[in-house]
Image (tube, rainbow, N blue to C red; front, side):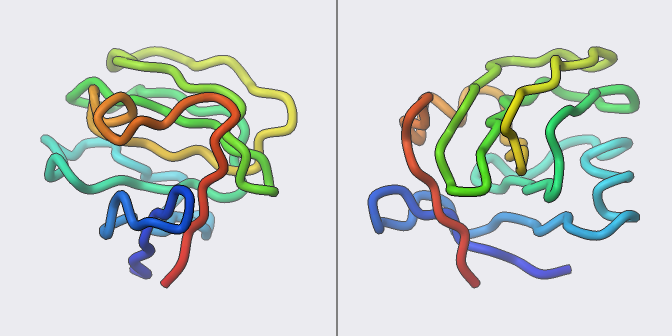
Length: 115
């Protein structure tokens, strides 16, 4: 699996983002994992809607346009939920619950993913 770095304003804010950009990795996402390390994340591309069926822990989700602009942040999404589709979303970043606030990610920010 390809690992990416997440940058905000040119600064790395997370250096372990799993790239889920093929059918299988998007399909599996974080399902059935007991947890992920606090400072890890998963990037689903292309993606405009997610569910948390098969999940075992709460997550923050960040919907991101193709330009990198944050369109929507959903905090503390519980397992077994369907999150609404976000118009214009091209990617969804999944983080441990509380990490969106810790990383100060909010609507209108621009994020970049690099190798």
